[in-house]
Length: 102
Image (cartoon, rainbow, N blue to C red; front, side, top):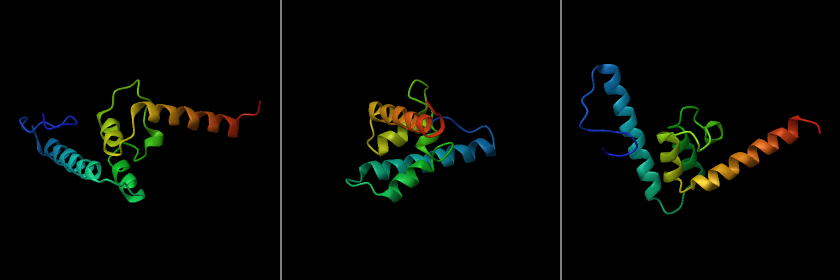
């Protein structure tokens, strides 16, 4: 395993799977490059999030569900799972307070 669910030993079964593996490798290399930077920029954050299903950490599942992509982005941006979870709770509470009257 190379990391983040990418295996170089596995041979793709068809062209579509080969393209998916190329995309995963491209994302892995981008996230590795971002992780190695001492100072992350807003542009780094946005590039990292582009590798996610919905292109945003705000739309990612909570940490109780496994997700290699989310965890790879958090790792690259040096955001702990605990900090991510606490932020998700704050976002939830803010949405609730903005839309639901007590």
